[in-house]
Length: 190
Length: 154
Picture 1 (spheres, each protein chain N blue to C red):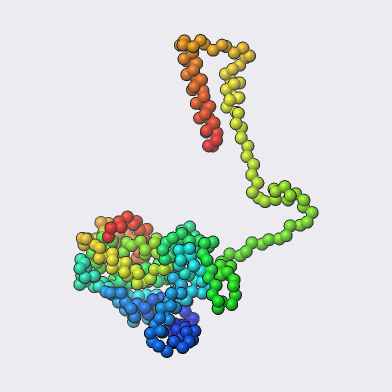
Picture 2: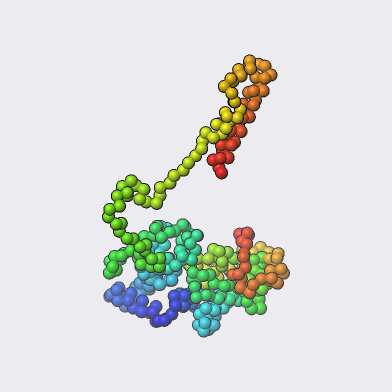
């Protein structure tokens, strides 16, 4: 396994004097595996760490997130995970301090052209595409009832309290009120 | 190891660590695996103190070049297929980590341990209730089966 031994070699070089001692070498190896990506098992490159503390190469984690786009969980502990919630790690040795997340996503960046000068309408805030408008016909059922059931300007007087007619009228008015409410809710839901 | 695909690199690493430091009762047939990294045979012993004590089983692992993002295809092969409520007589295993719950942080070793543990917690040796029908109708690849994981007790 050529590459594995070459990794060890680099570790030895970095460790310097202690490398000759077999015990230290074993420890070095342990330290090295502490920084292995949980997916490719190599030392993490373009390392990112999840909120749950698990280390990955960004290319590896990105590929996993792409594999299951609607179920993004940490491969190690199954905690929720997302591109926005991983932290890139910058060691002292890394030459470029650029966010690894910027590099891999194959998704191309959006094309943005500058607005042409002279278009003065943007000041109203309608420039963005988030403007919405909605209409409602709130009074419709009541207008319907008044025009249908109260024709003529001579409204009959309410029946005196306690009579059979009064009870019936109360009952009817309740029914109509409920009908109106049901109709309104139906209108709102539809 | 230059010119190896990422999946082969990872499999090579796993193979080395499994040869060097295998979990108890598990050993890999290094010859077969080294010939073709995408096809491994694992020898497994039933754990002591369980219904499978003293029995030996063979597991076959088939990897795609999308490994570890794609789960391996794992089946029991050879003369002795364990009699277990989650193991069909054709060697197919009903185990969620082999399909839906697969994660690239799992490995051949962790899959082997899961299977040993699945066997060890068995209370009564029996085939799955739908064994006869499944074995007759299933695809050769267990990953094509729409498994229904409902029993977490074994």
